[in-house]
Amino acid sequence: MKQDSFFFRNGILMARRLFLATFIVEMIIYLVISALPLSYPTLLAVIQGQQKAIDSQPFMPVLFSIFPHNLLIASLEIIPFIGQFFFIFSTVETSVVIAIEGTSVHTSGIFVFITLALFPHTWLELPSYAIATSASIYLIYIIARRRTLLREKIRKVLYLYFFVILELFTAGVFESAEIVMEQTLPSPNNIIYPLLLWIPAIPVIYLLIRIFRRINRDEYVTNPEPGFPELTPTP
Image (cartoon, rainbow, N blue to C red; front, top):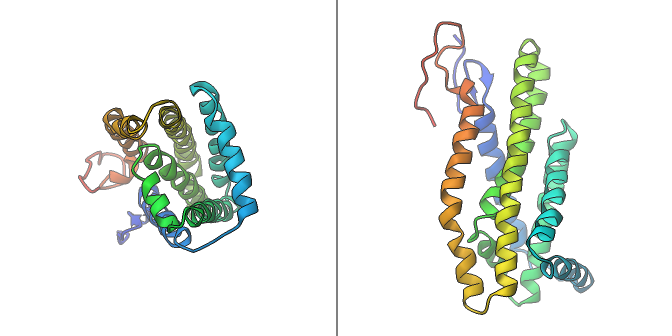
């Protein structure tokens, strides 16, 4: 019998645990890099110009400005070998932008990041990138160590990619709604109403968690042999 560990069960790497570790690394990068006192006025002007161009649009153009861009990032991150490097690069790049924005308003970028984390889209978008990257690492592992399972597991990786598409589209919907409310509503409603989006976001996030667990249902099986369908309550 194969020994189990945090990452392995029945001798096979668990994608859901790999995602958790990747997401923790992603959050650490954001917290560390965004806290740096960085100042690049030229880059800040370019970023603000791009942001204003998006913020001035109605809901649907905002959505279809955000979603394809985020999907492209995740699609690159799921490519084996390339994806891991792009994940680190894109996470560091975004963290640097947050740090610059924080410095421009004479505060730490970590407070800018925490502010972004108050809104639902952050908790949909950031996990998507971690899922894409962990799926890439999982695929490398299957090819290198468990090639006999490749046909079965490649289907799982495809399901994870489709899940990332769904999650990023959902994140885009919430982020677009937040942007439109922020730009069109008077103060303080332009802050209160986006925060109230947590009301529909909580059941949506719960449903997505259930779908994610369903995709990874093979990792809850006590015994991988046929005739042992019992599931364990392990998270």
